[in-house]
Length: 92
Image (spheres, rainbow, N blue to C red):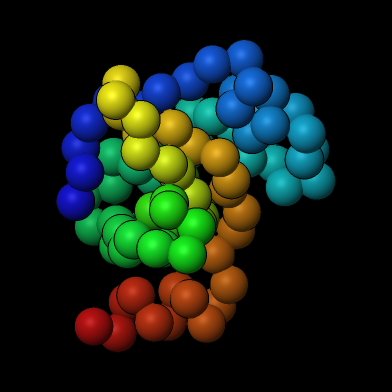
């Protein structure tokens, strides 16, 4: 698992915090998922990105997609994890 810093700029912060208010996901939530010691992280070669399934401090399951940058992990997408995904990562 990658534990480098999370990279925020105006573009990805706006996308996570403002572009999808119906999701109710904040950049803080994303930070928490990317620090979750029990998160599951896989590489998506077709997207050249990483998918992380983990929980926030409030125990909310999220899926976060991030891309690799020299400065660290750059989040580009976040959504609630489906029940199917949660079952998949918790039954291992």
